[in-house]
Image 1 (cartoon, rainbow, N blue to C red):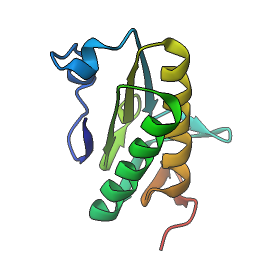
Image 2: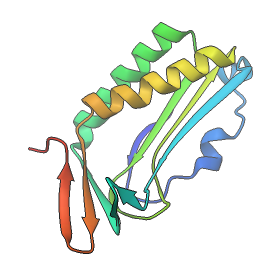
Image 3: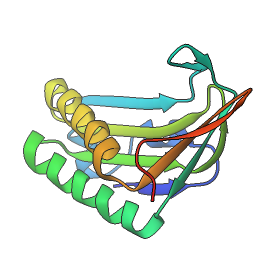
Length: 140
């Protein structure tokens, strides 16, 4: 299981590489979600994004989400890596990889993980435009 908050680019290849554990060997389906920096939001051109996190609490919340996802969806593993710092257009901000015996559970757990992460994990996003910047959502 991989749960990380990182400052460097996310190595997606490592996350999806087949492992040698019993958990990964049992997986007949692997679902992946990548959240990337898009070039527009609400019709306005984005220049870059900046993410901040309350690291320790974010990891604890991610662990809760992974535990709940594994209980709910009969999956082998859920890996989550979220990047913080300044990200440029096209870069990966979050990667989620779910391994399960069957594809349906992998897809369901993947959606549950990203949706719950966005609602509960203390990670904040600042969008930068040519004429200024705004924090998205609630930020203390």
